Length: 167
Image 1: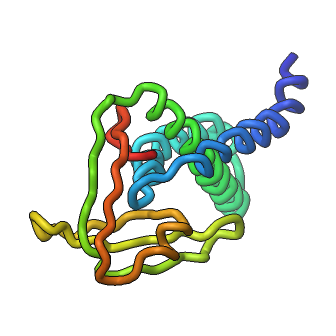
Image 2 (image 1 turned 45 degrees about the vertical axis):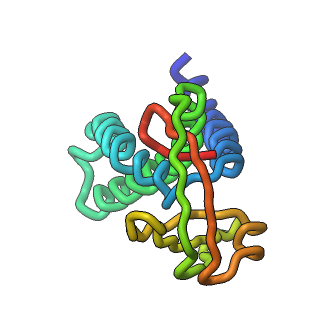
């Protein structure tokens, strides 16, 4: 039984990550809030859990092997935490409040981040007309192409149980 679990673990991990990608791509959200939430609250718990399970392997190893194992643990935790963001978004939506947060203001700056291999982030910086507060938003490519700096932009988001705003 233990051997079966050991052999199935990589396949289950890949399946977990593949399923976790779909909610990340489906939702629009503010300022990478779901990733920040996941790395702030879920990441440390996963790191502690992995270090606990790897502790017996770490205790009696030479220094170079310890460093390699710790690096391996950190990489696994980073990857799993990133993919857990999709599940956080899904749960955040399914248990969301009916309230919405709306942002309306003039576009003061716009830019795109092409750091990812799979998609590009499109961003606006808005200055609220009433309060003067400057807010950064992730927007769709369509909105990015349609609005110029200085134009009025308005967008409403639902707020989930974790405080993550999305649409």
